[in-house]
Length: 330
Image (cartoon, helix red, strand yellow):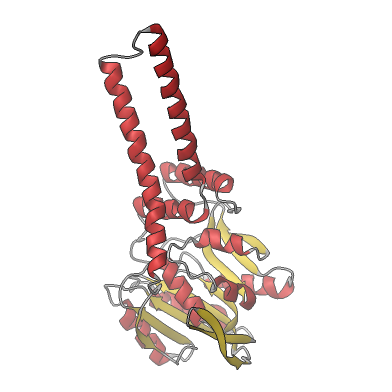
């Protein structure tokens, strides 16, 4: 069952009570960005994995402002199968927004998110579904990679990130956990109650608190195209996670500022009583640069929090749908 709410006059008012019988067992949410080389093969793999099973399913493709023929191919799949539905964004809003939109449009008792690049196999979706049906104490399954085919530097950075995040963020992140997961309807609906723009789903799902089983999997090579995730995009995503879930950077700035103030006071007292200078020439220039760099770094961190506050206060939509395809999504 679901209650449908509307926002009126700043408050939440129940304007309609709808008893909704789940129309299907499984909803598969597939964010897509320039995946024209992979979508058809992905759909064929889904049919091979699901059509022989005794459950109904839907595939919800979310075109995140692709510049290639991704949306055209999705429309073609919608015409050929009633199990396929699609929405197309007006521009690229990011994978986090695409996942939110797909889950919001899903109708299944279980909802899974999966990439279209064939690195994550539909057969694993069946394993997650079977696990949740046989283990009712769990509300979600998240797949994690035990081994990743990436450079040593990226691997080292990710290890540092997970270790730092588990100390600073207030939620426990599973190292190597992916966005390849399955949720019961209760967990999916809870996820939809968190519509913030600075989204960090790796932290949002643990914060929700639903009992999650972590299942290992091996990622396959991409069937075509290139990943849109560069090192700098990953770095920005990690930074947004720290800003969204922790005030520790601000506390570090406060402690650092207090420490520098005490050092300056101690140096001033020493110079007054000894009538001697602590540094001169090159040393003075070094400390000037040190202080300037510290101040600029602190202002940058504060600016990140102010920018997030500004973004959230504007209350702009998380995404804008330009077009729909397939059966009308509820």
